[in-house]
Amino acid sequence: MFEKSADELKTWGADITTGEIKQQPEIWRDALNIYRESKKAVDAFLAEARAMGEGRLSVIFCGAGTSDYVGDTVAPYLRHAGDRALYDFKAIASTDIVSAPRDFLNPDEPTLLVSFARSGNSPESLAAVEIVRSYVKNAKFLHITCAPEGKLAQESEGDENALTILIPRANDGGFAMTGSFTCMSLMATLIFDTASEEQKAAWVETAAQMGEQVVAREAEVMQFLLTDYNRVTYLGSGSMSGLAQEAQLKILELAHGLVATSFDSAMSYRHGPKSFVDGKTLVFLFVSNDPYTRQYDLDLLNEVKGDAICQKVIAVQQDAGELFDGESFTFTGFDELPEAYLALPFIMVGQTVSLLNSVRVGNTPDTPSPTGQVNRVVRGVTIHPFSA
Image (tube, rainbow, N blue to C red):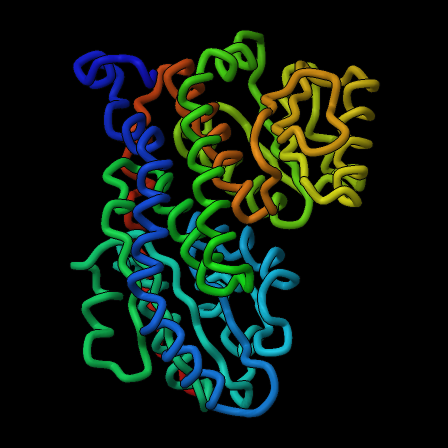
């Protein structure tokens, strides 16, 4: 797909999504530059947020759907790579905040709400901000979004309690969030990671080069799909569990449900969800680079392979320790990446699987919902009044 002409891709309804997957390494480098340009303003804003109260500041990563999975992917990493003395990182979906605020918010806890939004026009994104504003006594708002014209960005202008970071090249035009997911994940990681600026820049460049390798090795990804399957499972541990959720959603979205999907953490998979697997299932596992966690990932890969219960079991891994010796997409020749940065090229593998699978089942990746029942920006949501 990545080598096809624009005209060929248009005949499959795939030109937008293909281009947006392919360009991600380039826009990760752009995101790094945006972070550098915004760093002084971000640091000042975070200092103001920390001054709202004593103790750790509650940082809530918030979004809906793919934007929610941004928080699920970065929060586990930042709980050890961020400043734990200053911040308490949580990932809470905006849909949960809007529907049950008292279950998820502490009105007496100074809170920084970090909202992830591709368009900034989803009703839940806007409502979550207003609910936190009205319910939490001391709150500030950091918006990481891709659309300068979106309501989330526009309505925060002039608000001394809000700061917006824009990543406009990541404002995907296709149905599925691809570059917006990776760029928002990267931006949040860069902001809160305590690693040096030089180290973060080096990790971004390594991730970008690995992403470019995914594009160059598309034929290897295609080989995973040249078999008889109708189910796909994605697994991972820690941050990679959140990434697994995003990868399975891409399959589900781009194939319009024609291929069944599931996701889970590697360790919890045995506790019932493994029942999903049958002889027509592909099982992918994003292997952690943490030496301790990696043991559990490899245990499960070897178990599923030994069970011979699925069509294929496939590791997505970096050559940074013991490797799965079965089928894999393995990155070799790169410096070892920590999980939040490794997630970027890993999800490009998953996005490529989803793109190829969508064409395989006769769907159109750019507009995968033929009935329009699922939309690029969610519709049909009624926001009911909330009284604090």
